[in-house]
Image (cartoon, rainbow, N blue to C red; front, side):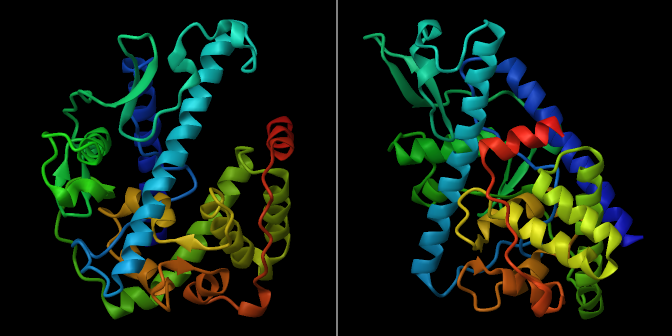
Length: 328
């Protein structure tokens, strides 16, 4: 029953994300705000309803915040490039054709929390978002690392931008590193019992395999991971292991440094935090040495898998493999 709840919650998170992106695109065709996506292959949360106590290692925390902000910007840059390509394709132009780029902003990709605007000299500049779309739906709300509920992810990144720029609209120094912890209103979560925690690795393994299989059916896996999924279908001893390797590689896909930072767990943490209260303490335990990085070995131990069966099988995702996946 709980396994079904995980999958159902993931579907809800994906639908919310897709709906938010479509709504956001209609409102901001050119002056685009940033949104935090909840990828279709994930879902989970952070600390059992409360913001965790700051780690004793301040340097590690600082590095983690820096990685979080770089990952936010990497995701936003990807969405901006896709937006430019879409505009140019609609006008029958190649993304490499400079003739179409009459609008200087089409050449500029602003970081999270900023929009491109034309200054008095006709130059493209990245300014903090002046106003975010007014949101009335509760599902747009987000809970931050200060255990505060904000009306939308746009408002969170706008505030961080204002603080980094030294604006008088910044609420205080602590908002320089404002982050989204999970989707929904901040609330007190029930404590995850030991019996629930002991059963959670099994549920998580099943969930990962079900998601991998679903993505294979929808042709959303690269050929490399599709072969791993088919291997898991035909070899029950590889079912959980292949799914675990795939998800670890998927989480690390932004920088391929063979470590998954705690912030890189966001796609499987934030969408389900308000629905699955054990996911946060579970993910915290995965970082056994508390260095803010989860190795493949740590990930396997956390899921109670045989470490001898775990091997780095991450796909080196290139444009060629992406094209092959689209043609599959």
